[in-house]
Length: 274
Ligand code: ZN
Image (tube, rainbow, N blue to C red):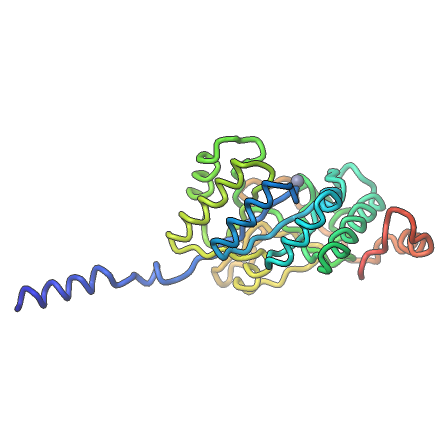
């Protein structure tokens, strides 16, 4: 009898989860450059199966190629951000060029999904003061990343998945691309393995909200800190793609340009929402 009681107590002790295992850790999976035909479809199937929501930073020109797929991303509850229209690096464009590209992409997303994007990931993660000024006007926070497995150049899905699994910490934003089978394979393996380790996958906006952070235009976010009194770390990066310039005081961006576009609605740009 005593032996049975000891075994029962030992069993309880062994199966009792630790406090750390009970505390969920949160990650945001993000996918750039799509939608991308069968790769995005496969990814969406895998996400539905796992009941996981991700964040997709879509290119306007690809939305025009895959409108049904774009609509499906929104219908299945994923967050949609803009990755610009033509995937041009914004540091190579004038302020008006950035505004035009963002406006065109915004129109594509709204017309296809009925959703107005509230996040921007600039192509290449490249931004400067000129871009930040536009994002203040457009109310688009810049979302970068804290974990980058470089899946756009690696074809070994195990290497991509292992990089993410090794690096992931609570509050991280993971950069991926739904542009290849190896990326899709890696993403689904990452979800399975990190879920088993106690991580939960949420959208970028959900991650910010869970961490008590309010995102705003003119700011760039790399990850979100769940440590109180540590507000700076939400802007820390594993590798910072560009220096974060001192941001000038907000002012109306390109009012004359917007007014001109308002009077010429048939041109490539639409006015941005202010
Ligand atoms: Zn990109």
